Image (cartoon, rainbow, N blue to C red; front, side):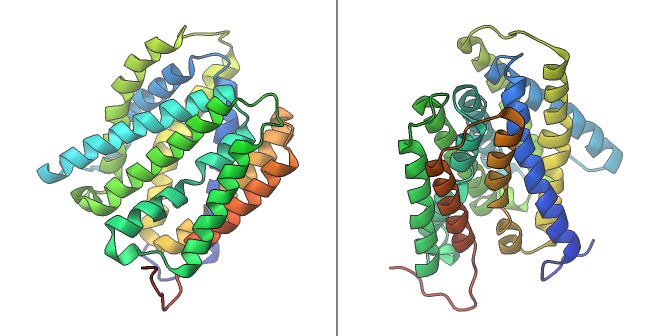
Length: 299
């Protein structure tokens, strides 16, 4: 498809379904942790994604060569990827899907904050600053709410580190020579570098295998094929077709869907404060991703 200057019905539908897909993945990770050490599962996911990507790249005839000056940023993005999913998988072992999702999808907060200082064209406007304040307030509310006995503060804080690490990956793609590298090679850097790191680190987090059942293996395969490889490629493909701001505006849907799915599928009790936190983060993300025609930067 040719790049488009605006969002159409196909793009909106695809992005809504992708947001639901990512939300469902949070539930799958939570379930899969019942059979695998969380960090070990994350490592297996990255290793499996390497194989799937290699097959896909081979079939498409895509070269794996990248500019030499992009390699350091590619390696750094892989380290960030390993840190993100170490923290996310451990987080979902210690807290609820709903809380982890609200905090994880605060990523645009940290990306917008860093971009304000590192990218001259991404200065915070008053509208985006308001969005930043709302979303940060939502994250703070989620962290301070300890009414759910099934959620540990450690799990919530790990989700926060995962969100910041995710923003680090986005910055690597935005402000380094890695931005000139095609999406498939960017993703290959992330899964190829993260796989050995995650598998090695996993030995420090207890037994690699827990009470393994077929549902856990199915969940891991789903993550490898439908999320970590083809799913992320689909996202990068949509980013290459539609304006980035329009694509980003759908990001608030993932935590909304995740909270609903955690409640429906896992029977999680979602407190009123978490719903309020979700609303604040969703509203903040919407304002952060807003791109008015004329912007007044915050000095």
